[in-house]
Image 1 (tube, rainbow, N blue to C red):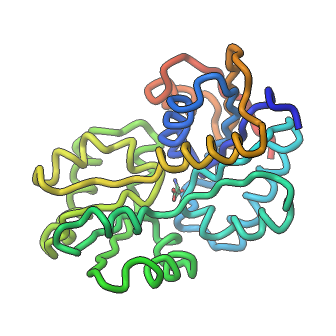
Image 2: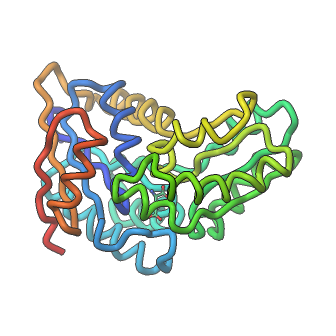
Length: 264
Ligand code: DGL
């Protein structure tokens, strides 16, 4: 595998851009190819079978570019499909992501943790196993957030509608006394400033973007696949309306980018 090849990253939509930022920060010379499956967002309300089918198709597309590693920048797709992806491509470096339960347990003074995530992630066997492994001695309050991803997809990162919806989701966690909130969906770090304004200052917000970028860096390093100095080339694809996606992307990514049609 060519170490100058790009890294492939996908999500149901633009949430994975929160992870892409961390990858760029840590690995500034790596080229990135990003796929937003915008025609099928939100994954959180889809069946696991459907998400597996989409994740396999998108991964096959990315590997054909070719990319040297795959990042599933989506907690919901990781929960539903990462096992199948690793079975299909055992030689490929595939990095998934899951809600930051372990770091949250370590960080929480009260042992009361709130998890904001999609319905799909929260009902998955992978999430149940994660709680069993790391959170058996703490109190965990879970909160699905239907509708939030759709608002973020249209660039509504700090509108009254987003504030009202998010505030309704955070309230029960604060009432339960949670002092640590896990952002268990890659879309949610995109509304972190709004979320921060809705919680008291002692409440910590934890997400996994940086840890994923670090893991990617370590694994690429181990395999001798870190790129040598180069001007990175980024490429964005979407299965949805590319003009609409490009408009939202402009507010999320520092350099203006065209968005290409994924075609399936
Ligand atoms: N961004 C995704 C995640 O991390 C999925 C959001 C959705 O499409 O429901 O879970």
